Length: 305
Image 1 (tube, helix red, strand yellow):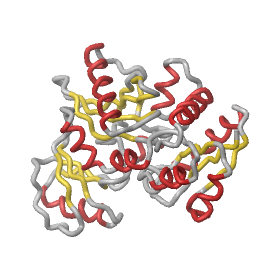
Image 2 (image 1 turned 90 degrees about the vertical axis):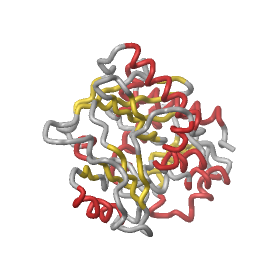
Image 3 (image 1 turned 30 degrees about the vertical axis):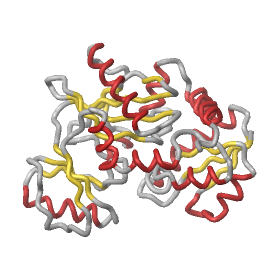
Image 4 (image 1 turned 60 degrees about the vertical axis):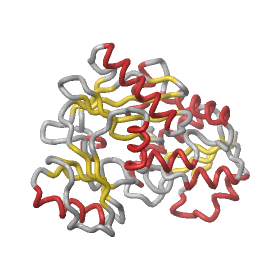
């Protein structure tokens, strides 16, 4: 097949996207596909034309565009199939406040939260008990995130997010262990436990991408009951958001065993050492086989209309 590999873009996660695309490109060629690399930051206006000539598009974008559903909407117009969620589901999952409303509606625990917009401004009163996380409402890789422990630091944390042209999601701090759960097709993958570096308070950008970053343990050393519960919740969240193909959700688990879903990622990191490929590897998928499976699922779903 002729596959367009779409990566890069203009979000703050551009370099992460380009880094992952290198291995995906090699895997696509190993699978026998003809690959055309496309960076929407360089030639956005050509996407519809190029997509009409392709058999499939593999999207490796993070943030906007990509996870917001824009690229998927254009691919739908070109009748070009792709892996993962369609436009509406992508946007719903990327918007953390909106997705939390869905989680709560389906009975899935998520940390208490408050949305603060630039219109409300940095003088907006904090409605939650400290400490809290303040993060961009639509973004990833922990960019722009602050852990606020003192009320006087709250306005600066909001300003940091507003400088990124974002609304701010304020979220109660849940002490505990971070676990992540991927979905491949209709089935949950083994949990991964994330242990941040000793000099970090949370799973920040350096923990995710530095060579000496967080320790990731797969499968997570947790009891079967907790594992089954989180996997079941992840399946409910995946379906409630209308996702297809694959996704990955991040959970915090308290010392009492209460699991809280933080967010769901519709375009998980796709390097061989990224979290979802690690979990897929534990159930027998090599990285190249995983790329092939995502293409199969995308073709099976069609153009997501």
